[in-house]
Amino acid sequence: MKRIHGVLPSIFAAAALVAAVGCSSTAQAQSNPMVKLTDPCPIKAENWRGKAFYEILFMFRQPDGGGIGNYFNSLGNTLPEPNDAMDARFRALNADTLKKEFGGDGVFFNGPRRLVANTVTGMSWDGCKQRVIAGIPLNLDGVFEVPSLEKFVSGSLPTYRPMVSKRTSAMIFNAGETVYELITPEGAVYTMFSLSLKTDPENTIENLPTLSKRLTLPTGWQFRSRKLDNEMVLTANADSNPPNTVVLDQLEGNYQYNAGASAKK
Image 1 (tube, helix red, strand yellow):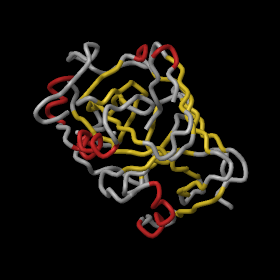
Image 2: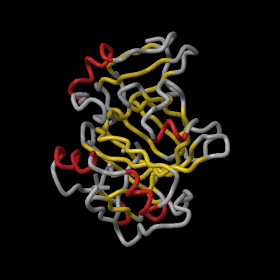
Image 3: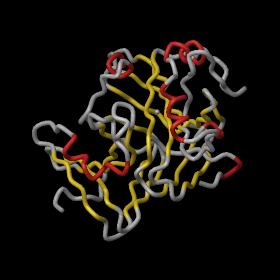
Image 4: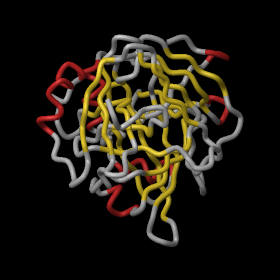
């Protein structure tokens, strides 16, 4: 991936070392670390399918018990060590350490992850300032909302339930690629754009063909895979109305609403 304006963050799209947390000078503790989506910078990430990235969400409690916060993502940034070593760094991060460093009411670690899309273009924010945590360079990529902060940060994720993800991106899947999708009881199609190794280290991109056998779907939901005859693009806009939504499976795979896809093959 080539970086534009000197710094190339990523889309979308998530443990500081217990002993030490490395952070950039731009990532000082703040009384309110919620960052507004201003000062955008364009990105383009090519040939990223199967590559590692990491995401950390810094969340705030809402009056109704829900949560809202920023997510910081490493996709597109150069990592200092191979995937296995970076996965270990990420898994060693500690939420309490990061809350003391950056503030917020909760921290969620999204990953280790691998991208399923081939190419990503879009926007990062805050002038592409980086937070470097345990040697992992992260950029502000959007705002995320969840129905229950406590459940979210404890790891009890709201699977198979649409959640708001405010970001600006286009995720491109090449013609001939196989895509993996969830279909809601109402017929809405969600396409997987990234997978997680958090709960199952064997949930790799090479093992996606067996994913249907490893998922337990709620009543009325369907899972399918299909080979693309033509290039497919998933788009999202940070200020769209209605907002962009995503769904998680129980292995924390991420699926984005695909308005251009039909529930019928």
